[in-house]
Length: 182
Image (cartoon, rainbow, N blue to C red):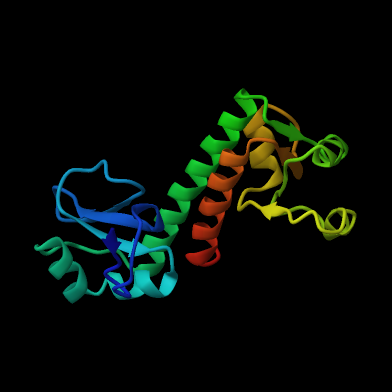
């Protein structure tokens, strides 16, 4: 169990990102527990990040001073880490052949099971054409980014057939959304 230094809520480690003081005193955010040193945990909510970077809270949690970034900068750094993780999950699904890109192919695949994934910049008209009850997951990645990841032209609609990878993508997207737009 971990405790958020912003709101003091307790939860599983996956519900938090971790901050540590680097060798130069700067505070660095990470997903997981790879960096050495005493860490402070924070929820994936912008309000908690704002509370966490207050000098009193951070110094108490890290048991040392540290140069904390502004809350918005910290949130942007964590969102970038979450995007990297989502890109890795999409690449893993692609290598595993559990990802079907393209509107027509994805919708055909959806009929046999799976989860629809949408690029954040997918046109409103394309969104309206989706079947009712499809419950798509919007990724904080653009069509160009997704296409580049897959070595293809821009892709706005995909279907993922691996439930565990779909759940991991959903969790990362939810954390990204909790840290605000950016």
